[in-house]
Image (cartoon, rainbow, N blue to C red; front, side, top):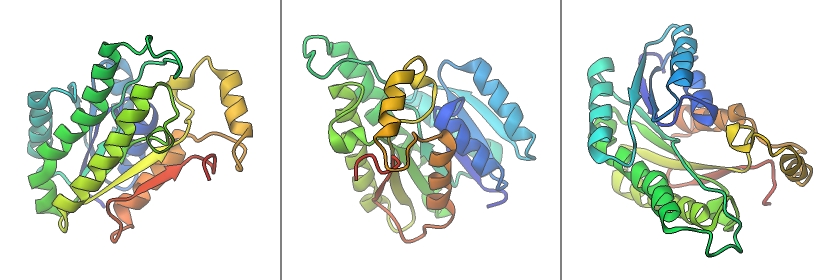
Length: 244
């Protein structure tokens, strides 16, 4: 994979960062997209460059089509190509499922804009270059999209929609581009900071006895990108067997 190029949204921290570092270890040049976490993005950039590859930072909101198109174009101009797109950027608002009145309209709009529309915008903007390079797309979704559980009803719906979009794009971008999804369960990121008791209970309920690390998800992403050349349109759960 030496010399290839990847664009990873939401890559300053967590799962996106872990995927970026995993690919950089294989010689892939990386574009880190972020929207707010500039300090963390700069730190991640240093870690990636220390691995001997180039790294481009691009601040953009994925729900803004023009920003996305500019980000893709700058990636291609910087690296001369784009082979891999990882749609990892995501948002949520924590609202109990039985609190229907608490699930405000703006929560719906924000989660669908970023988690579904933003993912689609990135895929659309990258399509022609990915087809040229016989590339691939990995969308980070969630088991919430399969179970209807999760941080809110809106979040679960957005991830179900993202899984559906993954299937649709796998059909229309074939045979040149493979499009797959990874659906993590709960992952040890800043999203679960301060929820130690809740995390422990969930970990105890999984056959493997723990929650996922960002690196667990990154390994699956790397496998889909580098080795799984006859898999497309699939969603792979990374949840320690929680929802067997």
